[in-house]
Image: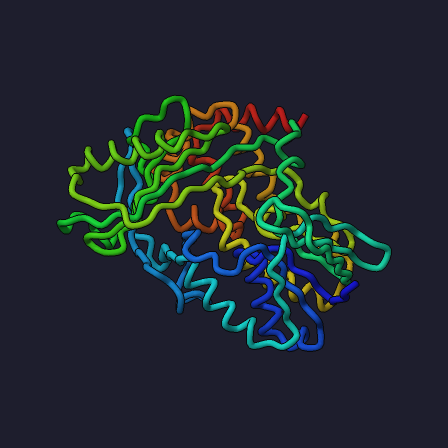
Length: 390
């Protein structure tokens, strides 16, 4: 039995960011911290984007920034100057390398490359069980049990929110190609935030285009819907979009595919006194947008401060008005998925983009909330509101 103060399960964005913040805070210098993951080098497995007002803590590892975004739909099209905000991109390889460089310099951190089989609450803390196998599915060669005071896990309990009916679950699913063109065809000063001019086919579907330079861009086909597509369906949509834009001479240099659950399910009820779910597993994904990185940055910072004053992890979660806003929006999107383009177009047409960003960052005032609420067609939201209220 091996004992630690803290164990972090998963070294993705949330787990590694939490470890990084602990490594920078002298409060944790005398604490033993174990990180467990089944892989060490994740490479460019993710691309994270977020908007931010001014200079931020991650500016040193940014891949690209844009001060203008484009929103497109059949009813409303506009190129929008978002200053003093900027839309920022981080490639995961740069993020992982930068944070691991800090964590690995701390002697109180240990990393175990192994498979996690279970974790559970104990009377005085928590227990984690890992196994080493012969090959991927071969016989168990070694089982190890770790005890600790606290566990932070980014391992999603998909059954908890997928097999319940109280809160809608919509997937933000996507496939993206990083392409290189022969000619300079991109305006790399503007990010295409949402382009709903693609066929909606009864869903909420849009293209997302992030030009890194005039010949290189990420082209991503994204849906907010319950059901995923086959890989060929995503690829066909990207090919068609590029053809319509007159982009024919290109090569694919990278690709990424993923699915992010968007739900107002109360992830906090999965937490215990000694076990805290973090990242997407902890409900840190913004339910109405699927954005996770900025919330993870905020929550990991808040978590290290919380640990200095309280040892009951059930108290870390704080409910806010934005949870209810997201719930109403997801109700509408789940029941009227084909109307997503109209809803977003109305918002971007009638509301100031800076107010939209503040609202989605959960930093807006009641007055600003009302401006956003009044910018969308009211009928569906009123129906959902009264359904939830009663």
